[in-house]
Length: 288
Image 1 (cartoon, rainbow, N blue to C red):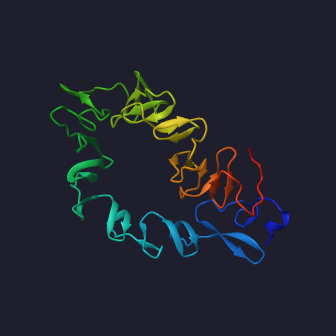
Image 2 (cartoon, rainbow, N blue to C red; image 1 turned 45 degrees about the vertical axis):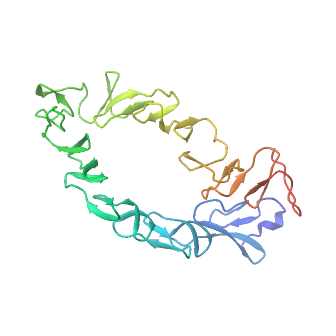
Image 3 (cartoon, one colour; image 1 turned 90 degrees about the vertical axis):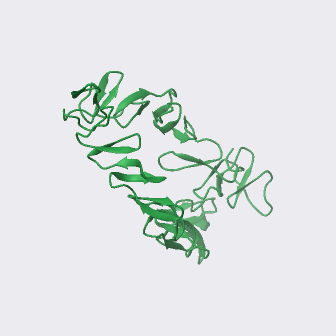
């Protein structure tokens, strides 16, 4: 094993999986541990997303929860994610949480919320409209349907079930009277693939209020807006989707949101914390 400390540089932790020396074991599933004459990045147990010891998880993988012993335990089979083994945060498809019980959704729903008939998504051959699922060739009183009598329609005209109310073939996006096979840039598209331009020009795609970004084009997404550079005091994942650090002293933090990996100008980074003055008994490199 290579001894990173012999270089007398700031990157003194041996990250053997990457075959390199690093300053922090800041990636998911690794933590720092002393080994012989050097420090190494040790992998967490498989059930942990992040940890600070081999059997001490900080965050669990999906479908597991953290118990009082900092171990990841499987959620109840009805849970997709949970706060403890029996308390769901989100439910598996086809069920919803009501008064602490897991109840099945209506058979027409793929997923539901609040009550069994309040659909939030539908099976492949049906479409969601006003929290209800409508099957192929089945229209409500406003003639909203999946295929109507013309199998190329997503929505048919109110008084003619053989004529489509949109100008695009099934599966294409209608934006400013043009059809495309992919969602246009800077747009919101409803369940019928009818698209509207976002009011926030920095968005790649936006929500139905048009000013709230839900994705960005090679920029950082934070609080519904896109930024060319990582916003201060945030953690950003590989998709450049950012979350505010819980430790507000950080310029940037790791996935735990508490550990700083960078500090504001003229501050000192030491053991994942930022200091206005140099900590005692330390040697510091000037990055600013």
